[in-house]
Image (tube, rainbow, N blue to C red; front, side):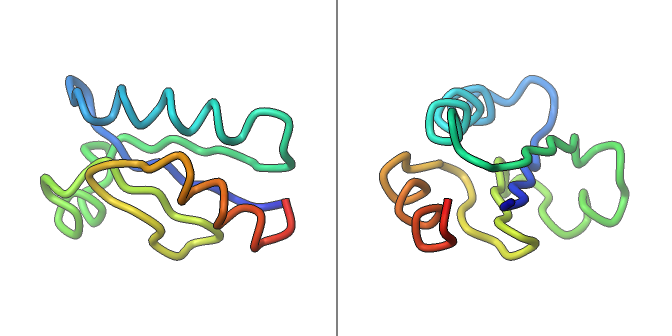
Length: 81
């Protein structure tokens, strides 16, 4: 199982677009998705600021600002899902 962490915040248009892309890519795959509003965690807010949305795969940064569906799909395939 791959862990995908989606870092976001309220009222973020790019986050809404990314959320849709992520849902489409992970559908039918063994991927656990956790969404975290960075404003609920001071350390995350300090680390990422306005560089959101951010996608982490198994704790490693995969993308930020935009989620490219094809690239995310290839990364998941490389991880065996």
